[in-house]
Image 1 (cartoon, rainbow over the protein chains, first blue to last red):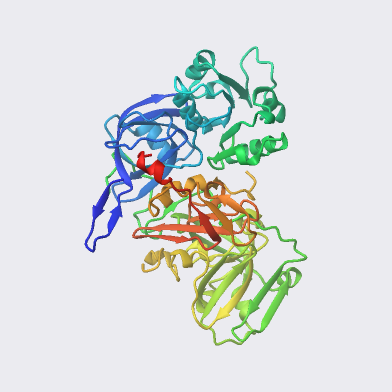
Image 2: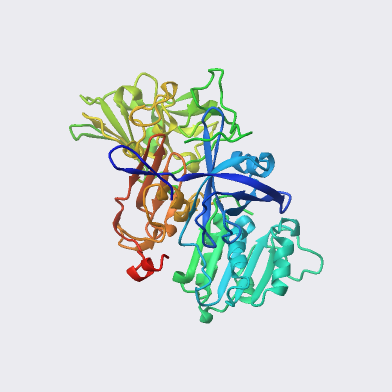
Amino acid sequence: MARAAIPGGLTVRRSWRQAQILERRPETASASTLAFEVTGWPGHLAGQHVDVRLTAPDGYQAARSYSLAAPADGDRIAITVQRVPDGEVSSYLADEARDGDTVEVRGPVGGWFVWKPEDSGPVLLVAGGSGVVPLMAMIRSRDGVSPTPFRLLYSVRTPQDRIYDHELRRRGTEDGGLEVTFLYTRTAPAGETRSVGRITAEDLLRHGWPPEVEPTCYVCGPTPFVETVADLLIDLGHNPTRIRTERFGPTGP
Amino acid sequence: MNIFTRGFRGRKRDSTGQLPPGQYLTNDFPVLSAGPTPRIPLDAWEFLIATEQGESHRWSWAELMALPAESVTVDVHCVTRWSKLDTVWRGVSLDTLLADIATEADFAMAHSYGGYSTNLPLEDLLGGKAWVAYEYDGEELAPEHGGPARLLVPHLYFWKSAKWVRGIELMLQDSPGFWEQLGYHDYGDPWREQRYQGD
Amino acid sequence: MNEQMAAYDGNTLAGPLSEVFAIEVTTAAGRCRSCGTTSEVATFRVYGPGPGFVGRCPHCEDVLLQLVRTPDALWLDFSGVSALRIPMPTDAAAETGR
C-alpha cells in the first residue's frame, strides 16, 4: 500500500486511491456494473470489497462499500451497484458517473468472506438480491481454475431482477460442476413450478448440499435474508463454523 | 489528498442559515442506534436521579404520568447531518424533576436502558430546555425512537437526547459518555458545529 | 426489519480498520470480555455507521468495539475484547511472498 513519509520517521498509510471509470453497463433496471482502472491495484480475492468515496465541491464526503464483482485482472476492477432509493452514492454511481470520471477507492478489504480456488470441499452460495455480487466473483474466479462443485441459490423478486442473468444461466450449463437455481419471491417466470415466496428449508435441501457433505456456505444479501438463511442452514444441520455471512444492510427484498 | 468527484453534490445542505451549518433537511425520521432496542415493561420502568451525594430520587411510570407535562414543538439536529423541523413532543420538563433536588453538581450523565450514556452540563437540562418525552407527534413514543421515554434536549445535537432514558447522574466533574469517549464533543452545540472533541 | 437486529456485520469494518492495522483484522478472533465467547471480527453484530460503528458480541450483544472517524482522527475502543488472535502468515508463507 502506498505510504508517505512525514517528519519524525513515521509513515502515513494512504488508504484511498483514485479509480477512473472505464465503462458502466446496466445489469437490470436498478443495477449497473462499473469497471474502473486503478493504477497499481495489488490484486484481490473473490469475496472482497472496496469502499468507494465521493467528494462534493464543498468538501462533503460520502462513502459506501461495494463487493468486487470479478476476479483480479491487472489494474481493472469491477463492482455492481444497486440503486438504493434516496441513495446519494448509489444514485451517483448508477446514473451520473461517466466514463473517465474518477472516484476514490479503498481496498481490497475483507479477508473472511472470501473463497480461494485452493480451498477444498463443495461450496454452497446463497444470494439475496444484490448479495449475488461477491458470489459472482467467486463463480468467475472458479472458471477454468478449480473443479470444486458449486451450487448457487439466488433469491430475487422477479425475473427482471436477476443480476448477471444471461451469464449465470450460461455458466450453469457450461461451467462443469456449477448449478444455478433462481428463487422468486414476488413473480416467477412462466413454467416455474416452485410457488413464489421467500427461501425455505426445503429450497436449501432441494438445491443445496446435504450437511453430511460439509460444504462451505456463503450467504450474502440484505440482513434479514442473511439471518434467516443462516438460521435455516443451522437448523438443517450445517456446522455454523462452515457458514460465512455478509450482511448488506437493512433493505429487504 | 482529496479529489472532487465531478457531478457529485450529496444531499442538499442548507446554505440559507435556516439550519445549523452542515445540516440537511429531512422529512423522514431516521433511526440510528448503537445497539438492540431495549424492551422495558412499564411496570418495571423507573426514572432515577442520583445526586453527587449518593441520594436517589425515583419515579415509576405511574408517578411520571402524574407529573405536569407539556407539549413542545422543536427542531432537532443529528450529528450525522440530518435536521428535522417542527417536531412535536410531549413530556415532563427536567425543571419539574429536578425541582426539589439539592445539588452542587455542574454536570450530568444521562443513562439509558441498554447501556448508552451521554454527558452534558446540568444547566443545559434546566430553564425549559429539556424533557423526559414519552409522546412524539401525538402518539406514544415508538421503541425504535426511544420509547417508552427518552431524554429530549433539542438545543444540542440529538445524540444528547438519550433514547430509552432511565436516569440522570449528577456529577461534580464532567465525564464523557458513550460517544464522547470516542471523539464526540462534550457539549455539542449544532450552531457552533461542535461535532467532535476539539471543535 | 426487526429493530432488534444489527444492520451490518464486522465485514463492514474491514475498510475503516485497514486505516489502522497493517494486516487484515476481520479474520481475527476476539474474546468477549463479558461472556467469554470467541468470535471472528467479521461476525460481530455491527451498528452504525453514524454516529460511529459499534461492534457487538454475536452471543451476548455486549459492546466489543467502537470506532469513530473524525476529520483528523480515528478513535478506536477495542476494550470489550479481552484478547485478539490475529492470523499471521508463517515464515514459509512470507518467504514465498504470499
